Amino acid sequence: MREAFFIKRAYVNFFRNRHNNFSSIINVAVVSFFALFLLFILENAIGFVEKLISNNSAIIILKVNSSPDDEKVLNDIIQGEKSIESFRFISPKEAFSELNTAFSLNTGSIDIEPEKILPAVFEIRFSKSLNSEAYNRFLKRLNECNAFKEIRINMDILEMSFKIKRYSIFFRIILYIILCISSFYILSNTIGLNLNNNRREEIELVELLGGDYMDIRIPYILEGLLVIGIGFGLGLAVAISGAYLFIPVISSVLSSKVFSFSPVMIREIDVIAIFSILVLSGFFGVVRFIRRFIRGLYEENSI
Image (cartoon, rainbow, N blue to C red; front, side):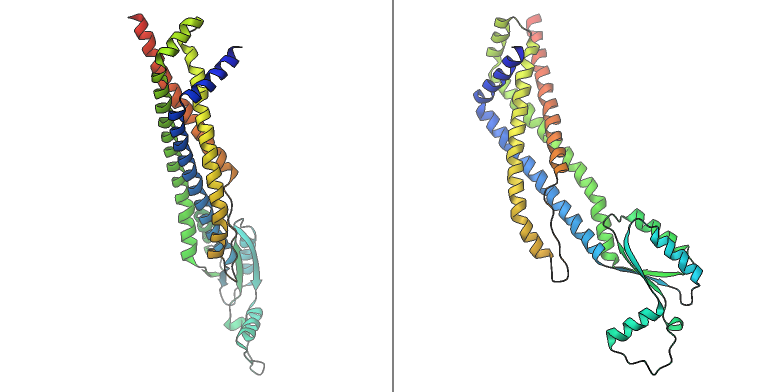
């Protein structure tokens, strides 16, 4: 019965304080929408750069006349690297044949030994999980191999990917801090206004039921959580609708005849993380104000 009373009281308070609660719901919805949509853009930016890296081959050039043993050592290094998705070895003869085909050369009558003029190479494709630490570690191992000469890759794209991944962590932390502060003060101020407006009625109700001032907490905490839930639901609905509208646009802008990019939807883990942050910080904001409010009531009674 006691729990049912608290739930009913929260329901009554929610509609009685509908003007304050409505403005707070809008504030929570706006904060939720921007947080979710910014993370949607961030994830697709990371995905696009990772797709560029995995679609562009890197070439590892070996020294001319390198020994088979050194080539095997280099092959083992590449094969054991987790950040490499696929690779293939191109011998000097294969490279020479591909050059003849690509440039329509007629070298059949010329006595050429490809091993003496062309190096063997490895064509590799990095996986999407590649980061700066893994790349530098791989490069260090390559430099320790006698057969290794140089690696050729689009460093501009690679460095951009490393920066986006590195700064995305700081961006998330800052975004979550802003969410915490926003939810804390939105709920604290809303419930504060509601409690002050209903101050006399709450005191009379506690005295009538013979309860304790601490009984005031639960209905207002439930009211605050209801504001968070409705506001987040609205923000999530708008963010998902916006993402569905933007996905075809992003795909058409970033894709081409030789490159296809499929944007990702808002991730469930981001939805859960943002909702959890809003609920927890909002909860502590409500509890903080109610404690101050109840402390003030006890001090008044002691006087």
